[in-house]
Length: 362
Image (cartoon, rainbow, N blue to C red; front, side, top):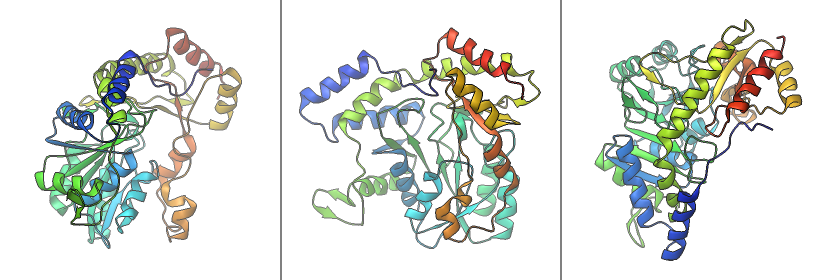
């Protein structure tokens, strides 16, 4: 079986875990501080605040940026539900814009239409989906024109760049995930990035029960602190993430070259000014169920991300989103499928993926 994802864990991660165990400090401590500083430096950010997951990082990124109860936040429905759920955690209301058919990212034209329709929108939460940055030039113009708070969901975009600038450095805050399937992992974890000192201070209080000084609590906060064990893994992974990303890009280029002539499949593309890091290699097909049957019979892993736009999820239907209609998001939810692209793939694995896909008569 060729899996859709496979974390690469080697001696450096194991050695760091042993160092943490030997230190006797398993909870948050010096390893976390070093990881925060190292990841912030990697992304050219001033501050990093490590958390327990990508979801908690998103929650803190939104709240620290000033999103609060009653606010309206525009976002994409073609993503994992944690993005819009984090808006709900703040007591705010998600509003959905459509996505681009080629990049799968939130569409600046749809953003503009929604802003014209709804002048009460305060925030914009964008998602750099599958490892490809959003169209930041147009988005930045809209943020300035409409005085929006911009938050970036970079859960799938470790090392991705737009015009030479890392994803996560365009907004007031950003959030990354380090789940095991991501381009780098801490086992489970996340991080909030910001260049604003006051936002950083608020984020640190939020992850630590609203406290700056132990047992003195200035606000309602949470227990969202990353552990030294997770940070130890992350420090080792951070040293390799560029190597991992290079391999992902090479694998994607190989797949593109071998599959681009198929008339029933559309390979992913990246604009010349974007560095795509291929968290997922996602193609559009005419008959997804037929291809899935073939992949399963041949032992090739796959992923369907995401089979329902968020506003069609049962929870959101109960909340009154039944009337939302975004045609591109709905079409993609029915036609995209992700093939293995991770750095643990061998040349034989890649050739098998190509052989199996090409054997399908879609």
